[in-house]
Image (cartoon, rainbow, N blue to C red; front, side):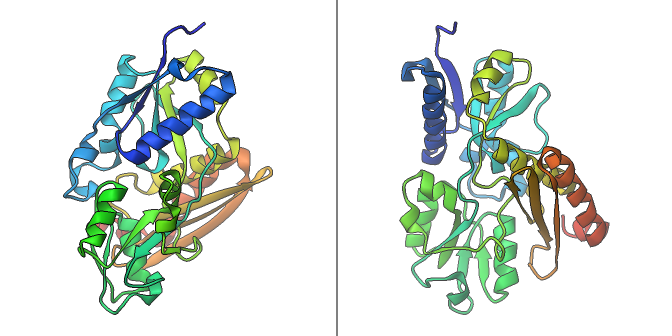
Length: 309
């Protein structure tokens, strides 16, 4: 029987902490454990420390996880809690995603004091976002709009917006809900028009692959539908580009024993894009995602990715 606390690794942002605390609460309920059986270990990552440049320029998604994963590998942590969309598609040898909590809303939130809807922004307005996907989708819908890099925690971005550094910004609605701030959203964008990032809205739990006791602990809070859907989306992303250099959207939904997937790749200016839809058995989620990735790559052509990636 475990006598010392399980050590949970997380970043230190308010959203990351909210996710770690949600995970702890679910595990306490699932196993009848006291709160003092879980120690939340806060770590600073390079992605948190460097906020003045796009992720694509400084190393991609792994910057939000590297320091945490080092401690997972060394045994200093028992498992880690991450926003799934921050995870690189290839994890360090020995580590894996063991469980996903039930997924939150996948949609993006438009936030602005200048317009109630994205499509109603004034001509030439400035939208602040660090996401290449969001930048490309904004340009696809409104080629007249300008975009600028907006990085940092949610409160940082909202402060920049209030200070007039941009006329609008885009945030994950799931994050606003987890922070208890859903009312900040001016508009919730339709995912059929403004498709989400692969794995958006999902919290994943990462651990050492040979630690069966931790796998057993975490499996009690795993949501199978979320696991299948995000596995499909991450497989799609892995085939195309997991490095943050490519505007990619992807969303899978599980209904019964079937899974439906829709994916999109865009050029950064949003003016050229390719879409794909597929479906199949939910227990083949990753295979369906990979097949969709290869199909859209064939459809777009290699030059589509090489000319500007």
